[in-house]
Image (tube, rainbow, N blue to C red; front, top):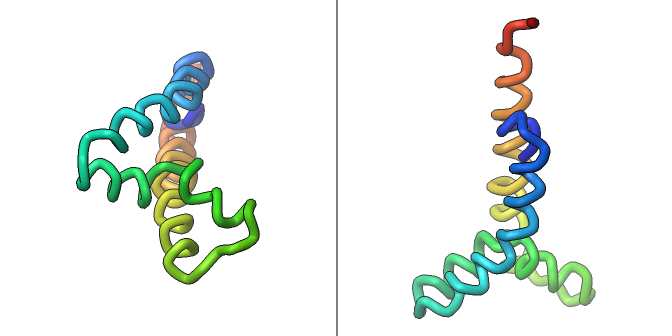
Length: 86
C-alpha cells in the first residue's frame, strides 16, 4: 500500500483502520457479510492459521490476497518505475 500511495504514513493509517471498517461493513446485512468473507484479509486468513482450510476458504484467501497485496503492489511498482527522478 505504501508503494501505491508513495506515502508511508497514509499506508500505515489504512492498514490500521481497515479491520475497523470491515467490522462495520460486516454488520450491514447479508451483502456486507459476503463482502467481509471474501475481501477482509483477517477473516480469510483465519482458517489458514486454525489449520482447517477448505477449498472455498482457499479461494477466499486468494481473492483477498490479490485485492490487498498483489494489486496494490503491482500498481505501486508501475507507479515507482514511471515516476520521474527529481
